[in-house]
Image: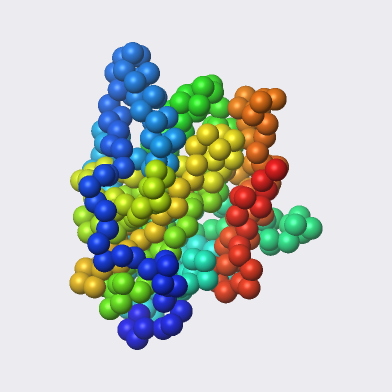
Length: 346
Ligand SMILES: O=C(O)CCC(=O)C(=O)O
Ligand SMILES: [Fe+2]
């Protein structure tokens, strides 16, 4: 990433401040009641509901994912990104093959100071062949695994299995916190379009002008993020719009509600903006698990959460087409703002 391209420069109002507020961290939730008695579960469900409502973000500890899975995936990620660019580009992602290595992603038309490696949970993953609403063709997506490091595929697949267990636990807690049946969301995730991203943020010579990831909301249902001990994730605090640094907590996962849960909950829970600050000296690694439903899911407020006083705030939209549209803007600067859930507001 040597020389600095103008494409990385954020508009002045979106540049990170040198000082970020660190005092008030996002809620920290202990998931150990999941493995104990029923009374404690009610308290946990209430805490999850408060965190989703007030922050849209929280961290979990005692989540049941053994530490070594996370250490192993961080280790293969470090080994993979340390390879030469030519080596990494052997598994390059492009518009035809949307999994693998990529280093020119844009968020809101500004280039991100990062490189990534994406792989899907379902293989093949089925998605629309194009973003065109009139094109009904589908395509199958297969993962691209590098030969180096040799254990990368195995380590990543083991991590996926652990994340899936945690993802469904969280999804069920969120359903309960909205007064829904525990398994209310589960059916949407048969043939899911969930994917995992390995993020590498190299040291950046212009950390006050560029961002690792520009401000955005996650488009899917739920994100489970592992960050290393460097720190850089900033969350926009709902109470005052201030950017808050999420301090790394050892072995915690950071959870955030995505746009789909915002729509399903009819705005009871909001998907919150976040971004990543980069660092002049240190590289940073993170691993988000983006939990997404099947491509043919029509996303709309759940009927249980809608009534005469509180009518549906959104019209139904097709997740696969939304996803295809979003992916498109990662490859090219579009002249218009990319699709957002507010475009479906009633
Ligand atoms: O690296 C991080 O901490 C967050 C990355 C992120 O928000 C994303 O990839 O959507
Ligand atoms: Fe994100």
